[in-house]
Image 1: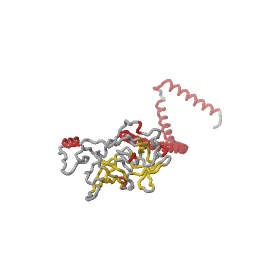
Image 2 (image 1 turned 135 degrees about the vertical axis):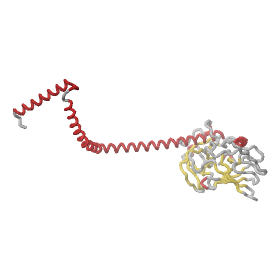
Image 3 (image 1 turned 30 degrees about the vertical axis):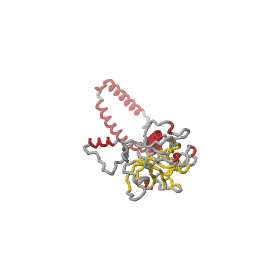
Image 4 (image 1 turned 120 degrees about the vertical axis):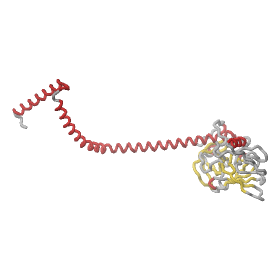
Length: 354
């Protein structure tokens, strides 16, 4: 457009008209005669703005996504790593709680029986020459461990130490076919020998030396002990008799017992570095209700109490001696107590990394 006198006059007129219109609109306020015209303008220009925004917005989002992709990918990786860490922490906390409970049961057993122990972790299941079932512990000679020491956990007898290194040791399990331990029937002086039979540690063979002794399912077995407590200390719970084999004409009686300790899932165990000054007898066995209480509950349910047939005896009773009940499978751990005396753990030794 050429800069002519006519063009300048037109621009001046338009500017003057715009100024007049703005003044009128401002002075009249809501009663402005230009209100309908402003509404039409807003409608027309608003529609144009929305159409333009609908066209420009996807393009802007696409450009922002392209430019922010590396940062978003990095943030996603950070969130994945954080999620994995939280999951690991949750599993570790659950494992720590389980180990803490096992350690409390173990120290409770040691405190009741008077054993001095060194706690440890089972770090591997391994074979060793001459034995099929053995595990490795994370303690050794530096912690006071020697060969032929008793190993137990919060439930019962586990096995004995057969090899010792400076910081590790090997334990042959009670379930190994080559293992043998002296055992005694609960509440009596009837003794025998417990042998491992393999079978993934589910059963132990108990050979009672007196073929005339009464033994029935439900009777409990504890370790008889060896001379000077080597390799087995006395009074450690071994298991519960599940079935008795008929052995007519033989000099011994054979029974199969379910071990208290789960020999297929060992974690926290203890090595007995010093035997108690006296035999704890049955003190470490799990508690159980009296027979009278059982009969009372049975009568309360409307069922008659169990009667004993002449010539037989109820589980836990032998030769007219007071009955000692067998514990249910889900009973609390033997001797489980939290008030553990400090002498239960050998001084100057670590607790197996617990």
